[in-house]
Length: 172
Image (cartoon, rainbow, N blue to C red; front, side):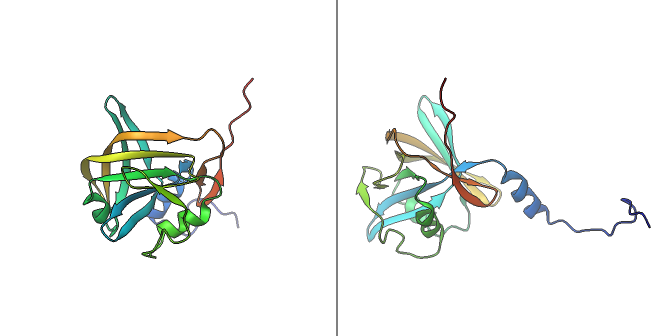
């Protein structure tokens, strides 16, 4: 018997899982968003950071509406984004997990917006500018107040459910 589309059994596809799998083909950077709270540093991992505007300098991040960390960061009005380096996979996992002491073992310095990881490839000090409800996430727009980067090191990248890194082609 030859199988054709009409003789194959129907396979249910979870539309959310399919959406996530397809968009997983877009590599994203990995970062930590952090602020200094009354009881110490507060932070969380994010992988959706986008440049929004040059004048004024704005970026956006997307936060799950179920996040219990974001309301605590938002209440401070400022935060620092650390763009993670290739060796930060475990740091990313820790900041994405439920452990409340996410800064344990992390080496960081205080920026005006909050803690910045010492060996991140870049950092941005930000003020909350606006928030927009978007499905099961909140789009946070932030105004960049200060920023810096290093010329060495490679950024941590998330692609198709796995961590990796990016190395640019050699310039000709």
